[in-house]
Length: 263
Figure (cartoon, rainbow, N blue to C red):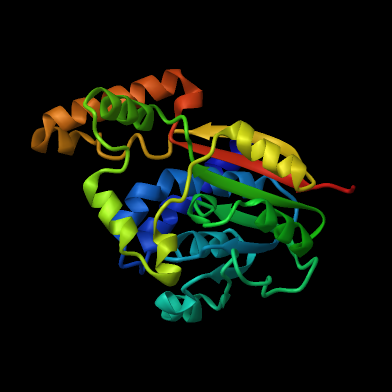
């Protein structure tokens, strides 16, 4: 597994060095997540991968660079049409909540469902069952999502309670309230914990292969250059990073690998 981590980190770093992306801040924020998921993908058998929720295409390109045959779905595939053309990747529209799968049953070795499950408007069980039909026998589903028990989120909720503030701050509430149609998927519907993901997986006829907690977002903003600009913010972020390094179940991202059950 250590070799897979090193290989994944190398591929992620090489992408940054040679990238044509116009979203460098997105890469900066998500590069640790990319490396964690790619390491998990590299540890699994099979080369045909379906990435669900491909925008903006950075991880898609990393998968291709790692030697995978990649297909994609997205609710807005037209937003990055030039990227899919450049990469030679077929990306089909799929609203998981309301539409049937756009690919044939048993087509994929691995499905990657990263930072999407929290956006679904409907409970995820139906989606997980649909994914199983797309996998080959013994195929794998990888899910990553923000951790419901992330220390920073728990502290924010505690402060909201103590200060008698709404859990949805005004700007968040107003943004959510004005979303229409498919745009509502831009916001989170709910967060999950690892036990909840594992339970949904088992109900949907998967076997849990591995469960991981990652500090995917804690290091963002604690670079030394940022200390000079905002020392107080840097100290708070550094404290959160230290706490989650020690209390691993409070880290910002949960990552789970599932295998399609034979039953």
